[in-house]
Amino acid sequence: SRLMSTGRTQSPIPVITVDGPSGSGKGTISQALAGQLGWHHLDSGSLYRLLAYAALQESLDLSDESALTALAKRLSHAYRLPTQDNPAIELYGKDVSDALRTEGCADAASRIAALPAVRVALLAWQRHYRQSPGLVADGRDMGTVVFPDAVLKLYLTARPDVRAERRYKQLINKGIESDLPSLIKEVEARDARDSGRKASPLKPAATALVVDNSDLGEAETLQQVLDAAHAVL
Ligand code: C5P
Image 1 (tube, rainbow, N blue to C red):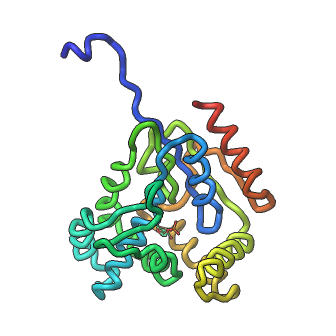
Image 2: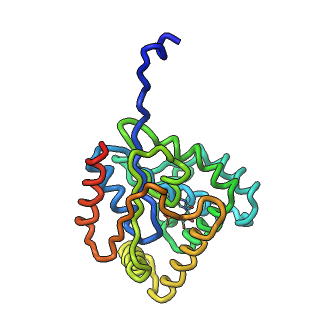
Image 3: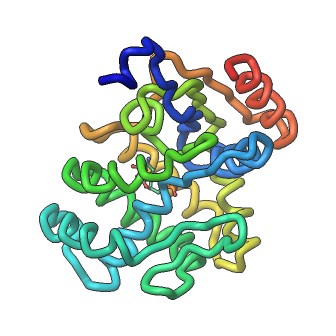
């Protein structure tokens, strides 16, 4: 076509991916990174949590792939993720943000996330958030599967005890009751399931910059990540 004949290839909307286990700080860091760059932010875990929450509400069997993918189809127009002017996650117009943060919902999310058909059903949802001027996407497989052409792939991690303690503080801050010993067990079980599954297991992308922030504060981690972003942008 005439448009193609100029020889210019249109560069795609840039994506920075931030993957890592729970409590690695990827949510906080990617939100701050998106804020600094003026880009959109996708918390892909919230999509798995939304689907899990709806499945629990409907008492679906959490291993029934076809029921879950049918549910995903029905939900695709029923949810909204946070925007700058409204931080709430909504399902059928109801704010479900707090319900999604519970460990019960996280556990159900990680169960359904092991099912290949569920992951495929959520692919289009996730790619929809790739909008100008750019996207910071956090999750488990953002760099490996969902946005393989990302301009920068980060993998945030921290020692398991540090991550469990962070999760503990997050939950307490939200007024969700929790105790550290059982949280450590839950976080370990979820990590094992996320890393051990066949479908898009949690692992750093081949080219990922791995940042272990066990002994780094939030500001220091953000600075490392910003430096890496500015080096490629
Ligand atoms: O990140 P978050 O803890 O909210 O994710 C909840 C669960 O959703 C994870 O334990 C994981 O099993 C699943 N998940 C995933 N792939 C993603 C994001 C989340 O499998 N990209």
